Length: 329
Image (cartoon, rainbow, N blue to C red; front, side, top):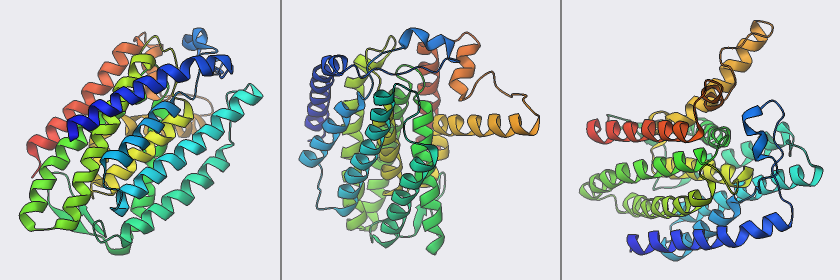
């Protein structure tokens, strides 16, 4: 069943992206490029909102191959689509007004925070998730109601981390694909542990998320055929916000939130580099730590090619996966 889900998701995402590309060109749904990103000047007008293709592919395949009677799966799909819709609105405004900014920052934060809080309270109340968390290289801890603010924070961090990572061709898609492959391997071990304990409810949820990881990997691999350097289409905020939501949901709903700082290290790097840059800039009246933030743009300014940066980020995630799988319990 997993192999069939992979093939179906890959084929559907490939077909939808190929069909969507000429439509986006016809509608002149081109990405506006910031003037100070000189390395990207040639990308001006490249079709954006390509994330629609893999969002539709993942949603359809999840409904076909996942057990949507499991509430956490249904919620993950709904949140994935909701964030995709938010990103679509953001991209639409950019295209309509011919500017790089869509929704204002406060508007995005309000929507993201609202969804994050809803997800956090849902996760706390779901018997298959509850207030327990797996610890990397350890067992489990119980947080009680502290799980709610932690989950909301993790959700916001993931969605913004993936969004910030979507700055060069193929980076967000390839990084998320590697994240999903790593999470799949970790969940395979977790499923064996839950089966030994006889936790059937949590086991069903974990196995379903495994299928969701496979579907996401397949859909993103197909999308990368169009999005890798030199990109024919960008995923836009439509895709990056949706992917961030899926990264968050798959980890949160399997009690793996604390694995994200290592497994999703590249997303953490994107977030922290921006925070450090902004804070240092304000404290030192205009000085910078990085040539440009997020960190992948710093590497670009250092002369790194986009392909080399993508390979580095994928390697970081794969090494993190090897450490977690090899040394975890």
